[in-house]
Length: 386
Image 1 (cartoon, rainbow, N blue to C red):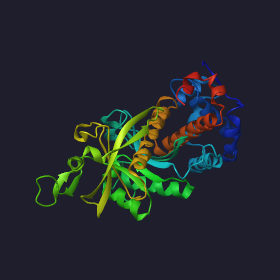
Image 2: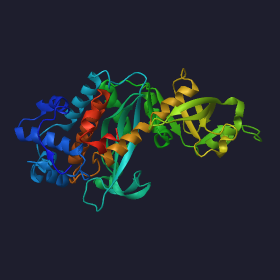
Image 3: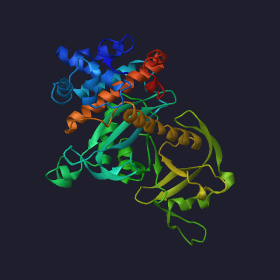
Image 4: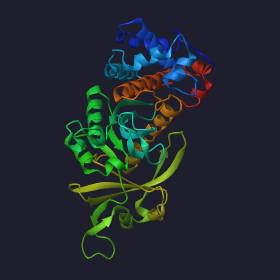
């Protein structure tokens, strides 16, 4: 659309009105509504310059002031958003859901934006200049939504480097996000992560210290101690070599649902292994599409859990819910402009992300309430993504 009219929308306004107590001035409320409408519009670019050019009656300076200088509490706003989702039975977290921990990178040029460094950027699949954010995300078989975000600040941005009291690793930030999710009262059956977190003893140990259930992926190259064919005693091997302990008859079928709604057939089998740097023997669930020759399977996964009552197929299904965080990253960046901010300090950037969370949650609620189709008559491009 060529312009965005900054006025109450009968479908969006009931949700946006829930945040009215955060604004002490009329221009704050106006900027908030305009920002959300700009993010969910069909405008290709979602930075403040592009949105101010499209939103009727909203100038660039007003947008910039709202994001970078205006006095409002974005953490409290995010808590209110979570409370609204939890209050609606159609979006509330469920005991069968999962809390997904992951991180995402945003490419950025230059060195002026706080937190930018050459580091691995998942969006690009390589090391590049950019920022990294650790996130928590709720997902079940019916809906998914972002919980919180914490920017990773590289040691090069701190006076004391890694010894600076303000420095925190991504693992420490991830555990802090989990603590906050528990404080929010979010229900989940397990914390779920990919192998970057799952292979880290400090992360797994942190979950166990908190007595939290988890299903995490292990790295196939992790070291284990096992007696394999030809060994006279237990020896050190790579985890991927442990599949030699299994025969095709050990695997049981499981149907896994992808984020796009399609299903695929896989097979699971369980092992108990001693993993280097982790205490005691660990339950490992092997997931493959090639039970006859799992070693040749490019999609081979190794999962571990501390929930003994979970069946192997349930472990695989819970881990499959992790795919929803990747869907969210795509929606947030491609449709809602999550990485298109035009501010340089992290406090303002996190404000932008929290406003993206509000926009995404609005669309989630519209879909779960059966009203998204009506809204999409005017916003067909975004409708296709939700």
